[in-house]
Image (cartoon, rainbow, N blue to C red; front, side, top):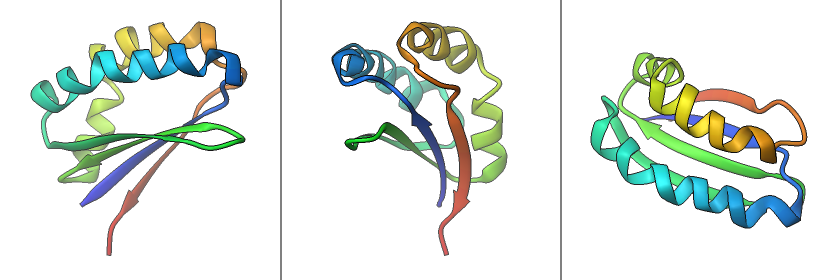
Length: 93
């Protein structure tokens, strides 16, 4: 399993709107993105993380280039962000 972790700096007041973006695009992600296995929203005091599960690192990288990600998700989140997202890909051992 490969994980795509996107860490977002979002003010607490904007987190409900960010959660709405997560909910809106979770099902399309799971149904239409090649290799997509899971998508979880993790809320911490300092930030919000979205953890995506994939079969391969190539599929995770490919997702970052899709219209679903670049236009829909990023477009909806952009006004809520306090800083640029931190994007990382991990391979489970």
